[in-house]
Amino acid sequence: MKKIFLVVLVTFIVGLAPVAKTEAATTEQVLLYSAAALIQLDMQLNRYANDTPAMTQYWQAQTGVLARDPDREVRVESMMLRIQNNGLIKFKHEYKWYITPKTEFNASCGLGRVVMINKGIMDYLDDDELAAILGHELAHGEGDHAVDALKKNMNLNILVSLYVAKNNNGLSQLISSTLSKSIQNEVYSIEHEWAADKQGYDYYVAAGYNPGGMAAAFAGMRYLGSDQPNSTLFTKIFNPRSHPPTTERIKVASEKMTEYSKNHVKVKNESTVQIDGKDVVTPVKNKLYQQPERAFLVAGNLARVYHDNLLEKATVNEEDGSVYIGSQPIMTPSVGDLSAAEIAAKINEITGL
Image (tube, rainbow, N blue to C red):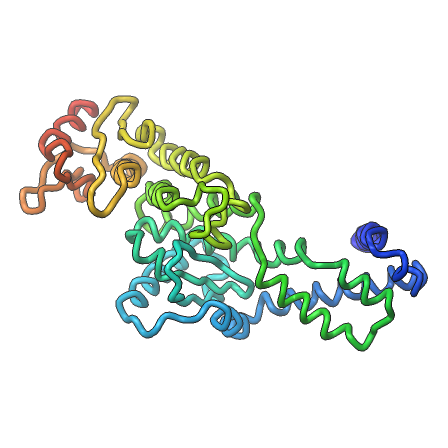
């Protein structure tokens, strides 16, 4: 079946090549040469995919590495270890990560299972939101999405032209050039992104992070402009041309959170936190978060309570002014919010406790 596929694919590509070049070799030669090139490309990609040290050097050369920053490094290290050891990651010993100096809101998982986190995304997101993004990137690595995307995006027309011209001495050089160009331009498909959102959600939540973190992170991303068709702020992994619309991703992540809460907790209109269909609180925007971010994070805290069967009477911690359910913090009111006492009272009214 694989050989038949190669013949059909190459025959189609040959049909796109200039006639003058196709005359330089027989159809049989073109098929043989092209099939051989595809096999070599496949072998090299698989080798690169499993050569994490070499690919780490490659990616670092492309993006640059942030100068020594212990606070950021410790932050990422602890989060990566926590997610990798959630019991769901199969390649947990095969990932490398580093922080880039780039200010764009961006992170990615490249060939070789190398996770790159921009300084810019770390500066904006809190730990629960950043953990969701890291879970998403690890899902790309677990699914070998980089290899799959590269194989689909190889410039096979160039290879066919080379073989038709019988330029055998240039084979190795061209394959290397094609791989390098494709790797640098590698972009996941929308299907890959949906898969990484879904699997990544399970990864970071299993590590104990806020179940509302993914919806909150995407809300922050949208606020910074990712839904703009020609946005230059976002590149590669959050490029809206290769990703689902951010608002749709927020919706799906929010639904995942509701499902996690055993369908008790929901965020209505990206603003109002509800328990069993009744309004609890509509958090205001504050200095650290946009309104939707706060709503999803508060809802995520409630979702954890319901998922873990830890529902009890809501109380107010007089020391920090936060609302708690047992040992689980739910919300710390900001100026403009309902008071902690009012929020606790609403929760208890709805739950009957």
